[in-house]
Length: 390
Image 1 (cartoon, one colour):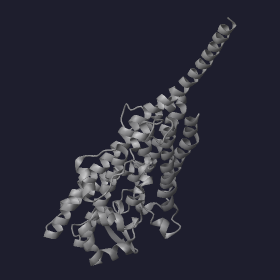
Image 2 (cartoon, helix red, strand yellow):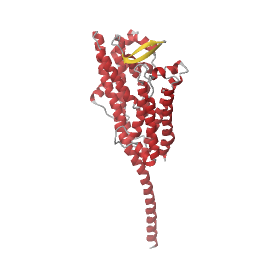
Image 3 (cartoon, one colour):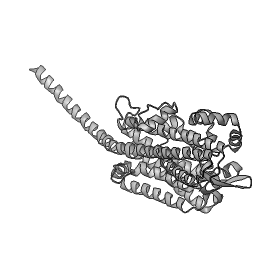
Image 4 (cartoon, helix red, strand yellow):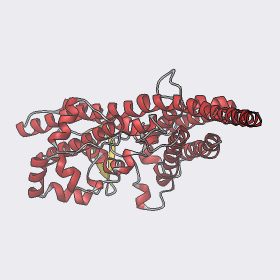
């Protein structure tokens, strides 16, 4: 009998401990479930949707640059094509800038970010390349494969294409952009080079979509196959959505949430300190020329879209998406309100700047925008991240 009572007592103790553990698990699971609810739309509706739209715009731009080369070779007018290609470049660029809050993962691990978005251009090397008949013949033969593998970052990507698509004028030994479409007077070498740049740029965009989504459309696969470009099998979106499961690099959804906010912190710091900060200080020629989109004259659009990438990551890209903002609100509604206001204030302050490319130095409006973006960076880094770690 004593054994039975002892056994019953042990069972009772186990039951109490089990209840206690179960209660703790429920507390943790509630947090994890809430964060999981935010991660799935973030991956599908923000990240993958943005990269898909970027790659789609790249496919359109590629068709247009192929047509431009054809017109150049036939000595036919392509003024409308240049205008349309410029518009496609802007569309592709917009999606890229709205992705910069998630430059972690494939964009970083595969060096896609510097590959497609390094600046300023190396004009001396570009001119030498365009006048090197042998190398240009290889680019005409191999296209994006040569551009992607053989050319340095300062000779390819968005800004090399931008220079050829948008008009610039010589001013004090510098190429100063006007924001207007380039005249339809490209040399054959320039048209060949433009096509190679855009082919490589589009392939990189497809690689980003593939690495996150694990799949792309047939025409995108075909472009990779034709260029002998192997897709990346990261399945990064799957890993985020399936945190804690076998095959995922994330143990918890809290880790995922922290990664998302850390990406927002990083791009806010880059916009404030480098993209706007360097031209604002302009104590050296290098800082003066550190203009992100000098030929299309879309630098302030770039900055605002970088902040919108934070907005989409934090608030959700689509109305009704459950996002990290919802979780923060559930824990500290006042903090969530301040984050949302800081995002809106930063975008508005950037929008107040006119002609950033030529007026950035010591411009009080630029300083005001830098301060607003820095304030957003601070609240995300010093308040939101600590809240997620509780």
